[in-house]
Structures are given as structure tokens and as C-alpha cells.
Image (tube, rainbow, N blue to C red; front, side, top):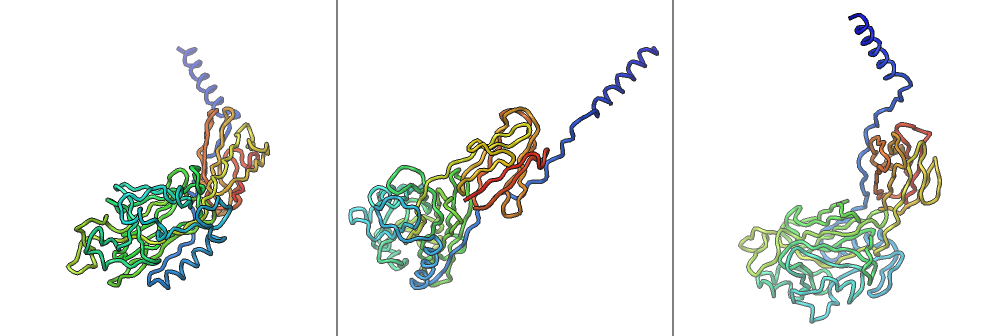
Length: 363
């Protein structure tokens, strides 16, 4: 039995030695920074047409540039506006307002959709829908107001003006009429991946029939779509607002002016090769540091060219950070982030530190 015991002991000692001999030490990745957020300036007010007009002036200034006229070609800056009042009579007071009217007929780069049954531009304060609403709503600009049919939600998707090419805007805001209940009326903002990046809530009043404005302006054009929830419910022939005499159960809210940044093209994504031991920009060949310049809202993807333990570790100072990857080792592995805010974002590999570095310049 002695040879057997000796052989077993020798094998265990050999295995123990091999497990520690020149074994690479791979540190665990640090905890990731908070997920990236899209920072924005909030604009909101509640009041009469004078106070709404003043806030709109601030909002327009934040968007930058001037008002680009309907049907003018895509521009590099500025804004577009929709106030419904120029909609032809044949398309007013009907439930079949064309979803692409403001990108095909009066070109402004906005296409509509609703989970309801249609869209309506109304010149009667919606009394044609429900006679009890005749005194419920007060328009901000001229007479016509807007509301989806059969729903209280409408999506606005942006296009390069007059084309089918997706566009991104820097900001979007809307005027709402008669917001009674806190939280009933919101605008949600979505990126090109259809991920929600922000939500704002229209201010509500207590008793008086006032106008509300709310909107967000981001640091760069990153918004591909907005979803507007206008009050608690769709308008019907019998529904009553909660502020009306006799008291309804739903907050009924309709819409007036929309103001948004000029729809701009999507920025090109960037690709980085991860090798042993380097980061290399596919676009320009820069390596350790790999340096890539992208537009805000664009995506950067790292792809492992060969087997090897590496990670993507953001090393910047907040807010110039992004979410880290875990350590990955298989050839063909990839990791992606989309960065919304302009700035310079440095990174390295958690395994190799300063031996593998990169930089993303976001404009």
C-alpha cells in the first residue's frame, strides 16, 4: 500500500503546486457606476396664455436657433412648431386626421400614432364630441385643439423633415388644457432603441380652468419618440370631467401647441476591437489609447478578437461615466453602451489597467 499512498500524495502535491505556479491573478471587476442617464432641463408652468407664452419663449431659446418654416428642408438646428390652427377645414372636426399630415402635407418631421381609433383636430372645444364639454376647454393659440380618438395617449415619432428617415430631436414640449389631477398628464421620452430616457409631468391646477406647459430639453438630439398621456381617459359623448358641475370621475385633458427641436440624423456607431492586450478603434486604428468620436446618443461596441480575459471599465469622473462590463474571455464576445451626454469618457480593462486604455469623445 505504501507506493499507492506515496503516489497519491505526490499527485496531490503536484496538483497543488501547478494550481499556483504562475497562475494569473484576475481581479474581480469593480462595482459598475450608475447606469447612464440623459440629463435635461425641465420647463413647466401653469397659468393663462400670457404665462404660457413666456415659458414657451424660454423653451424655444433652450432649443436654440430659429423657427424653421413648414415644408422647409431639413436643417442643422432650430425648431419646428405645430399649433393645429392651419389644418384645412376638410380635416378638422373629423376623427380621421392623417397620422403623417405633419410630415407629408405640412412637413415638420412629426408622425403620429395612437392605441385608439384615430386622431382629431377640433374647432368646437370638442362640443361636437360631447355637448357637455363646450365650456370645459380654453385654447392657447386661436381656436383648434387636438386629441386622439378612443384613447388618451398619442405617440410622436420624429423623421428628417419630409422623409422616412428616422430623426432625433433635442427637446419636446406641449401645451395642455385643463389638467386637474396631479400626475394625469405626462410626456415620456424614448431613445432610438425605444428605451425610455425621461418623463415629465404637466402641472395641475385646483379648480380654475388653466393652461399647462411642460417640456424637456436635452444636451443634444437624442429623442426618437415621445409618448403623451393626456389626462385619465379618452373623450366620449357621455363622459364628464372631474371639475364639471355634478362631478365626473376622470380628468379630461386636451392638447394645444407642440414645440420640438429640428429632427437630426442618427449619429454613426463606433466599433472597438479588444485584443491581447489592446483596445483598437476600428474606425481610425488608434490603439492604447483607442480614441473614438461619436454623436450623443450613438452606440459604441467592443468585440473580442481572440480569447483572453478583458473587461470594459469606465474610469472617468462623474458624470462622464458609463456602465462597466464584466470580465469576458471568449473570442467574439461583445459589449455595448449608448452614451447620451456630451463629454469625454475614459476607460481601461479591469484586468490589465493602464496597459489597455481607450477614450470616447461624445459631441
